[in-house]
Image (tube, rainbow, N blue to C red; front, side, top):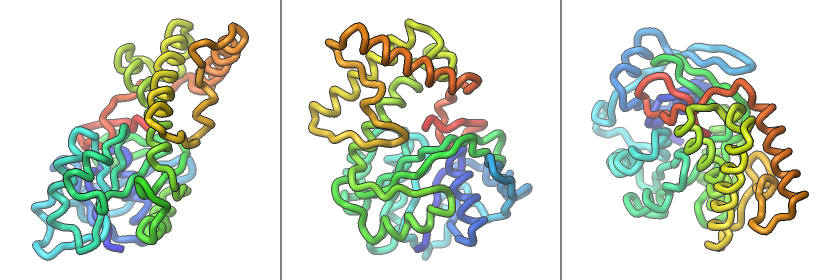
Length: 291
């Protein structure tokens, strides 16, 4: 499978580095001249909790730098959501017949991307690990977690199974038959971490140490889960049961105490976590994934 990776920021850098280290030969497009030049000079460096390594790939600053006859079976779009529609549209010119794009964004962008490239050309992915770019070309995977991969409204196809085998060089792969439910489960957490984190500048551990913020967390989380279920979405387990932190509107006092206790325990486990920078693989400087 001929793979194009667009976006060599925090997550994209880790994915690209692990694939190259495993012997794959993806074509890299950073979307950022500074990153492309840095990798060209010093290589692409990746640190994980288990290892550190360096690879020396060629990185293009834009799709325009690719050879005119370059064609790819899969274009991995690993940039912020506000750039993904243009990236998807531009990628059409370099997709082989039957080629497809893979969305890696937080939120639910797949339906909008499908309107641009066609539903048959969209595969969805969710990154479960944390990653950051300390400086152009220097990356770190900061936590473990799977890549959840699948078609939007059907069981995993041969193409997702093939891509899953390739991406298993990065981390464990979950071939998911309910990506829409998985996306909503992840959205419920992101709505809290990115919104409250953006307003307060706090990391998750610090947020959950405060009673008022735990109350907001439970309220926002409930609204997202209720909205998903009202839309007929069957929520999918990502890291934990999506109902674990769900507090019904009419919950008893004992249930409220229990859910608050769970949040406090999550907060204690996350003490020292940094506030998110919301730059998910944009390639615009030091960044931490908001996954």
